[in-house]
Length: 172
Image (cartoon, rainbow, N blue to C red; front, side, top):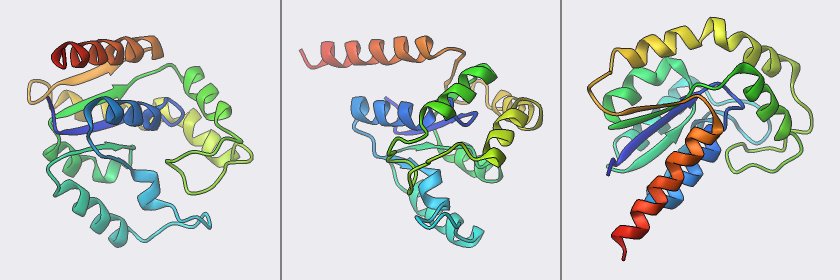
């Protein structure tokens, strides 16, 4: 069983939800990069503070980290032993972002009362501006460790169901 897992993908895909579900099944501690970056007053920490916090997590033996933060992806990939890539269609991610408005989330230090137009645009731009770089970076790690790419929520759900089943069979 892997001990250091990364979860990446477009905002709204459900990275944090998958992280929590995987954490519950594996017992691995879950860390949300958004909680390292964002303060409750909607400001952000400086990059040095973020990097120090991330380095402390990466130094641990066991973790699940969810989030993109492309600038730090190389160091996270260097320490992980498994990646989950939520490569969902844009509309699924947009709907995911819309659906979480008004919900208290453990991966964000405030309640989103509306879908921020700048964030919405960031999601719209993701397939052209960020996704090709992420795919290329992950491709360079093919064969180094498992990279699970899910194209639908049902694929991720099926993986988790199989993991839960194998865990219950091991405990029998």
